[in-house]
Amino acid sequence: MRALAPKRRSFRSGHWSFMFAEVAIWSFVVLVVTGLFLMVFYDPDMSPVLYQGVYTPLRGIPVSEAFDSTMRLSLEVRGGLLVRQMHHWATLVFVAAIALQLLRMFVTGAFRRPRTVQWLIWVTLLPLGMAAGETGNILPDDMLSGGSLWLIQSALLSIPVVGTSAVQLLFGPEFPGESIIPVMYWVHALVIPAAVAVLLGARERLVRRHGHSRFAASAPGRRGARPLMAGATVGVLVILGMGFQIAPIWLYGPAGPGQISAGSVPDWYMGFLDGALRIMPGWELTLGDHTLSLAVLLPALIMPGVFFTALAAYPMAERLAVGRLTRYDALGRPKTRSRMAGEWTGATVLDRPREAPVRTGVAAAGVAFYGLLWAAAANDQLAHEFQLSVEAVTIFFRFAVVIGPVIAFWVTHRLCLGLQLRERDAGEHGPESGVIVRTAQGAFHDRSEDHDRPAVTAG
Image 1: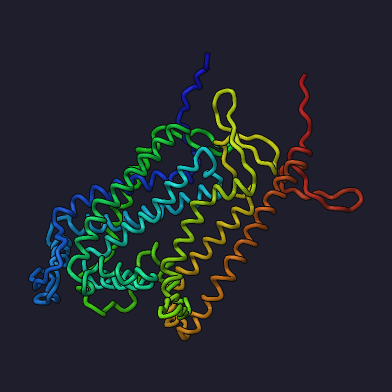
Image 2: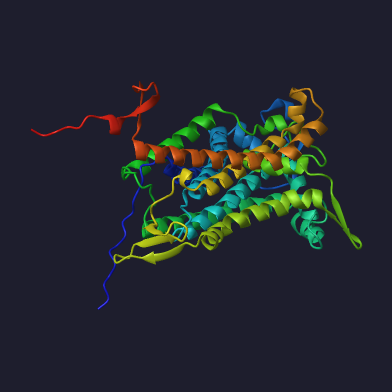
């Protein structure tokens, strides 16, 4: 008769890094609630009208119905500006929480079996969150919206063979046309939220099935942590929406073909693409009668594609490289073994970053690469502030994005090895007491707490 394995119970770790998933979930809840409110007042129509609202500087200027409805929503609907700014801030926090969750899972090895599917879910959520933010930025039809549309058109045109057809299919015979905002509206309001909701629901079911991962020395977290995190996330978003202005479209003005605001930058999660486009050399490749614009194709499409593919494939690559196998004990609990370590450990126990110096170094290199590309998106502003030429700043970042990640990997790898050595010494000689003693021969050494503590006898 086959024995039934006991039901796995959900386990919550008390470590602070486990909050990122909760922040992402509750940010998405705020996005859905505020988005439903915005849908009532927003009109995804590109038909031209004359603005006659309360903002005097724009009165009598031709705008689209989409821009006009966004202005009414922001300045005339009670609470509209607060809800709109909360919606925008929630998008930024949602993408940031996903990125930090992926970083936490990567450096701690939380992507290993049986949680590889959860890793793939978070990897998929990252581009979905970025797409949700970018499609939402297009909807107001302001000056920044026009800049985003120009970037989308340029990226599509750089695709060999099918690029021109893709642009005509999306925008119509003329750019930007009158159909792009209605299309983006339904993608933003229906397709992407539905996909995100399905993925988050699948992730929650997998967590209940496999339980929470944990660190070896961590204690179970409090059961009331989820309501507390929900209140904290919503509260912070309300404060951001009330006190920090974001996307003031009345200052940007309506979109115009061939126009873009000076000093305009995308949201933080798209900064690396902007930086890559700015520092990429103007390379072109001619194949027969066709010319490929590598200056756009490589940074806008190939680089993000390689990045997300590498993220998704990393668990399999590590299993092949390290030789991790998955087995189950008598109670049905998964166990993993590393051929390099030669011992079995519970699959729910996470690695500390210092215990995987190569993987942690790779994470540091990736963060440095992204950070340098993000800084390169402000090459013109950096040149202005430091009285340098834009060409000099651009050349600096071209070298920095290659050398910087290598330095970050080396420094992080050495730090991890140093921390391991320090722990090994503490285990052999006891923790340092901070007291320096001198021997009879005149030598100095640290006195350890465990080894130099007098013995306690009973009696």
